[in-house]
Image (tube, rainbow, N blue to C red; front, side, top):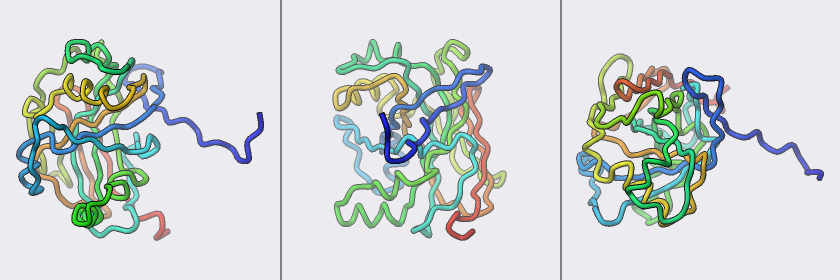
Length: 233
């Protein structure tokens, strides 16, 4: 079979303490999953109807080196616990959901906040605000067999050494099992799916030159920085 051009390389994520690479299928995200964050954004939480959006797989950036994106003057960080799946399915029960998990990580859901605000005002999708290049820097994956069930963990982010976000993962409105269940009602989940599970309060601005450190306590750390825009080079 011939193709008119060389297809893009698959997206792989490194797995801590192993030579294994994790092939990525899709990247799902849940919005408004911490009450304090929803309030700071002026959003109303519907506990019965979780809100999802997606990022392209190649938005993942394992190195943490993130060029400042074009078309925005208001780039925001959102630190999140991230789950990687080893199996999927439709209509997965909450009781079965945790059996689907391969690994945990910590990442940032970077957001062009000015574009998101304009999209909200006009009732338009968030794709340009959420799904841009390098918009999902992510730590190594840490296998559940190595770390055990994560239970309640502190999720935090520092920027230039200053703590900007800190929260407990047990404060999520929809826990990990519930998120997997709800996603499986809408999509056929697959091995290789990656799920960002929401951010606590304290989101804010990143500028070129900022250095960040995201941590899921006792499990994963991501260190990175904001580089000049590729378009500026």
